[in-house]
Length: 282
Ligand SMILES: NC(=O)c1ccc[n+]([C@@H]2O[C@H](COP(=O)([O-])OP(=O)(O)OC[C@H]3O[C@@H](n4cnc5c(N)ncnc54)[C@H](OP(=O)(O)O)[C@@H]3O)[C@@H](O)[C@H]2O)c1
Image 1: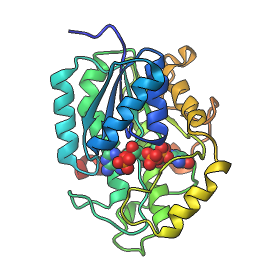
Image 2: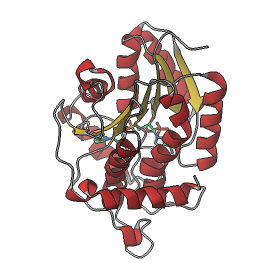
Image 3: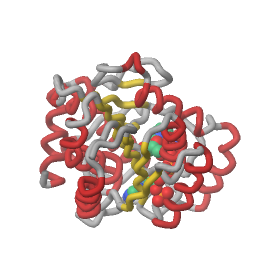
């Protein structure tokens, strides 16, 4: 049976931007499906979201998005319990200081920050399409970089955490533009948002953070944008009536941004799509 409320699935909804976005959407009456990899952190955040929004339709699904098996299970569970998906927010992200490998043998920044969104979105596309008009919002970032297609998993070069993070987040833009092209005429829009630099726990649970980084993160908190303010950018793309039908765009603070040149190259977008299809065996 169709839910007469809109349903929104948000990955990484137990912390930072994902949690603030979930609160904003719950306040707007959405039925929230949170995705978290940790039951305790997820449940605590679920209670916080319910309390902050005074809205009880908040469900929790568990998945470690570095694992393609978990992502497939997540999509299966979603299909078993929900008939529609009006909004998908691909928000979960992480940064790694050392080269780590996912359960599928893939470099972790690529696995979590790009391939997880790619696979989950594709597995849920039937529900999203049948809910049209529906929206997909990919949370990217603004780092001017290039995808190194000859060494996308950092096998030939010395690993650099920030560069690996930036490259994987550029993947969000390549993915957004190529998906928008493929979804033309379906009533499903897909856009990418740069949320700014804001207070969060990014990288704190990646298991390889040096102590100085946690200290730096804590010390810099007061100077960074409040998370709720950053979430307004996501909420704008997710809900603004004037963005109905707007697709394949990259937004900052309610204004369109110019993407790095490589992401404007449709060949590069197709190339990453093909590589992602192979790496996820889709
Ligand atoms: N913070 C910034 O200034 C900034 C700037 C630009 C873009 N962004 C982007 O904003 C998004 C949200 O990050 P945030 O800053 O809000 O950081 P955050 O507070 O650490 O939130 C990230 C969320 O992603 C989840 N996550 C990480 N790895 C996961 C995995 N393997 N499986 C499932 N969930 C996983 C985290 O779960 P755990 O709690 O279990 O770790 C957490 O819920 C990310 O895409 C990030 O790249 C952030």
